[in-house]
Amino acid sequence: MLSAFGMAFKTPDLRKKIFFTLSIMALFRFGSTVPTPGVSYSNVQQCLENVETGGLFGLINLFSGGALIQLSVFALGIMPYITASIIVQLLTVVIPRFETLKKEGQSGTAKLTQYTRYLTIGLAILQSTGLIAVARTPGRLLAGCDLAIIPDTSWLRIATMIFVMTAGTSVVMWLGELITDRGVGNGMSILIFTSIAASFPSQLWSIRLQKGLFAFIFVMAVGVLVVAAVVFVEQAQRRIPVQYAKRMVGRQAYGGTSTYIPIKVNQAGVIPVIFASSLLYIPSLIVNFTGSQSAWAVWISRNFVTGDHPIYVATYALLIIFFTYFYVAITFNPIEVADNMKQYGGFVPGIRAGKPTSDYLAYVLSRITAPGSLYLALVAIIPIAALIVFGATQNFPFGGTAILIVVGVGLDTAKQIESQLQQRSYEGFLR
Image 1 (cartoon, rainbow, N blue to C red):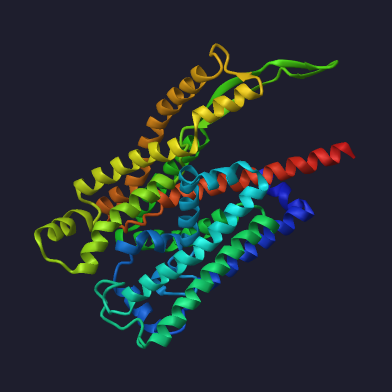
Image 2: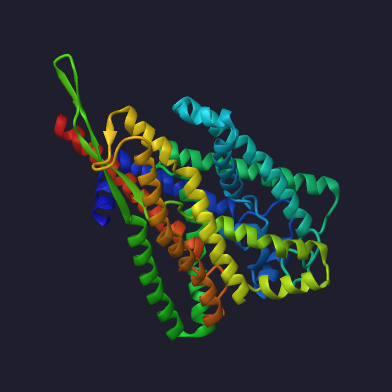
């Protein structure tokens, strides 16, 4: 991997793409520190020094690289686009029109991307309105800090802030597409990587200051082991062999090749963790907004707010396992794969084409999803264990959503660069 990056810097056009990507990442981080007009920057910084930044908005704050809590121009980050992409992807299973567009190739994908952009803007308006509605009341966004984050709560000022944050989301979406078109690719993923990686140094240093050198060294050792394990599992896959029958068209023979269907152990990626985290925020969010002191509200506050209660941990793990199976079921259709193989004369050795093949694929998928779901649940619980052992925040750097995204994006980016290097090697050989 290191040699691939070294070769990439020696290739002029790839070097330009890498530096262009780095410049966009720097611009994105700059926008994440610029406060939205109407926000008291000094009060926000004073609150951040005295209170924890986890809690209800911890997940969105993680994806924005800390910009959410600071109410910056890029406060919402890439989260509205992620939500819109997931919604559109789920709707392709429900709405026949979307399913047809998905099968139309590049033109259909472009149309779905356009719908995703429109939905992103709508979600950005809703999320920015909700965020400002919470932040306008002292002590609601940053619990324990009674300073006024938004001193002027007039309708004109609120409307200006909503417009600026929505425009910031549009700019973030545009920056991600620029990286995809003119950079190394995977623009949205790289922006998420930038947001999460930006918080690593401060989180590690806070552990060093609060818990001492021994705890810091122990956390770094655990981090190396976790990263190695995540890389190993993310690369692991079950390869189902596929044989294509030879066909004669005139005097020319076609087919007769062997290939395989790769089924990853973690077929669902980080989506189940995001779904489970978001769903577990809802009870606490209801209690926070209603301010209820009834028995059910007290029970939720005791078991679902701190994040280290056994009921919370068990519910979190079960939700991750459920959403892993759910997401794999809607993204990988064994019947469709079997039909496509049968149409082009492909078959799994020892398995008849058609329904037996789809049943075999479904069986393999269910068997391999089981360890994948347990792996996701285990990695997601690592920050909770760190919260109990070290008193660290739930955004512990070496676990959960953060490490899955950082490692996954890093591997994908390395593969992108290696594939582009291989293309240039083949072109040089042909010349």
